[in-house]
Length: 297
Ligand code: HEC
Ligand code: HEC
Image (cartoon, rainbow, N blue to C red; front, top):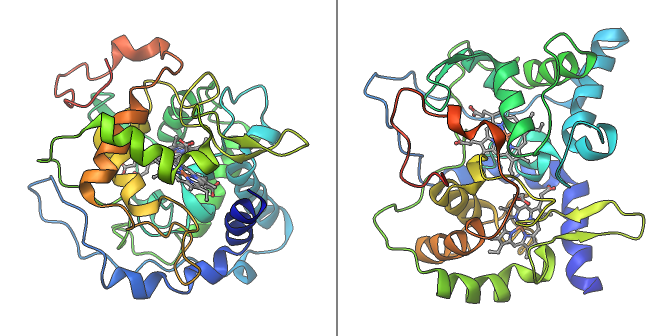
């Protein structure tokens, strides 16, 4: 177990090393599907700014605090976060990893129409969407120091991206949705490829000080049923691109592309259906219809 855990922790501490190979990987990673009919501007390569460009003074302090809030969310906001997770449990490598739902370019893409809300949402509202669902927590006030810091970090990450905000590797990529998932095989994949880190019962793993090393996939400390990750296709896509993490030394942080589309769907069908917290606001989702078929409610 020691060997197994040593690997990803080292990888997590060195996002820069992993990032060096992102450009290389982009060349072989299939582009995500584009559902919208309107023509979109050509995405620019995803390059996160260097830390040395964070300014000094209060502005830089706000950016640094925002980054810490994303990577250490549970510890810094224990009263707001219900799950044992950080934002970067899913938005990998400080929000800088292609197809790991990165934040580079994001501040240019909001406000944005959100089918789940049935209206345009601001970036602050989108952050709170993940606070309430993925983190099973409570929203941050828009004018709070914490929200301002998170937005400042996202704006800094996006500063070199043109105003259309389209970046190669944004989102989580895609998976073949025509395949039929098999949760029984999914359980086999889970035991073989995931349980060593995420636990035999999806509970994840903590260190001696009680800090999360590997985040939970189900149970009371996981994301709730309102989260994007509770949906089959989102979960399968994320897993295909990014899990099992740290399996190779020559890859980027979320060195996925190990599982086939079928295996990713199977394991997602298994873990998304496990027990997890309810989401109180679920009745208000998709008020204008268009609920995706993989929604949990
Ligand atoms: C359990 C996993 C998970 C956690 C934890 C999580 N998110 Fe997300 N988040 C997602 C998924 C999945 C999406 C949708 C990605 C997609 O469809 O491309 C998303 C989308 C977003 C988006 C919009 C991304 C885009 O490209 O439009 C923002 C902003 C965001 N999350 C912020 C946060 C913040 C801030 C936190 C912590 C407070 C957080 N998320 C925690 C899974 C998570
Ligand atoms: C070597 C350890 C390891 C293995 C094996 C592994 N993961 Fe992960 N997983 C992680 C880590 C670490 C994170 C959080 C990333 C971070 O904090 O940077 C994570 C995050 C996740 C997340 C998003 C956060 C959450 O808790 O919901 C999902 C979903 C996930 N893994 C699914 C899987 C699946 C499915 C497998 C098997 C195919 C798998 N993982 C194998 C280490 C691992």
